[in-house]
Length: 291
Image 1 (cartoon, one colour):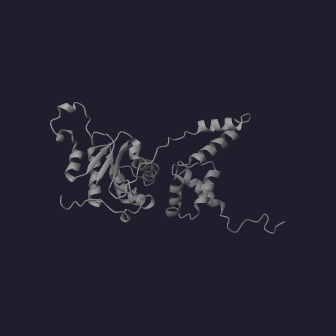
Image 2 (spheres, rainbow, N blue to C red):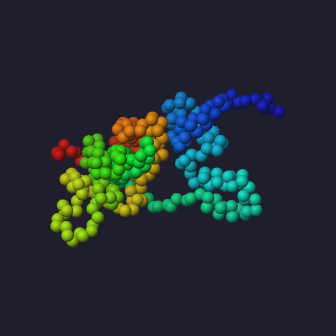
Image 3 (cartoon, rainbow, N blue to C red):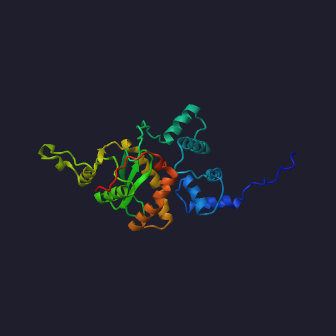
């Protein structure tokens, strides 16, 4: 029998730390994904433990990350079914079929070619959601495709020309004139081509946003396929996952407060954590000094 048998290892963490982590997640940080929660434990709660410890502690207590991978979802779904004794008379093949029906598998899409230059392609989109308070608002977002760097972000109550003008202004002031905006077919960017034979000039088919782009030499590529601008769609998902919780955590319930936090706190933090350093890329942004 080993001399250390029944003795607690010297590096064992106090159980109160585990209890505190569980309590914080179930109350103050409910809805955070595990990585986001781990960041706040270090930055705000002064709890310095490993990510593995946080992950294991939460999983052992039946808490699954909102961003759990497919393999984890499948495993947990299978364990749940086995605990319920619903698989007693099932074969392994039948079990797999049941689990596959329990877990919705996302469609896979081929990756598009990644731009080489900073400012070559800027994806824009609006995301309507309950971002703060109990009334829906819209986040207007612009992402550089080469670096995943957020170059513009603005809240408005609806997806409007004003919202995209504010995003465009941020891009121009902070970086310069981009080469191309990739957007959806919203009428802010592209009029419906009905009665096209009645139009008398190119100016007739330009929206106000389109006219501003034409004056600055910015191309617009519109699409009805969301996967064609998948980067900004994914960023919208990340913002919904993280930003909503941070606004709630900081008791922000007004449009002004949300935009201030978005631009001054969240976007810089997002770019530091998720984006590549755009300064290491060759830029095709044009100078606005001549306008």
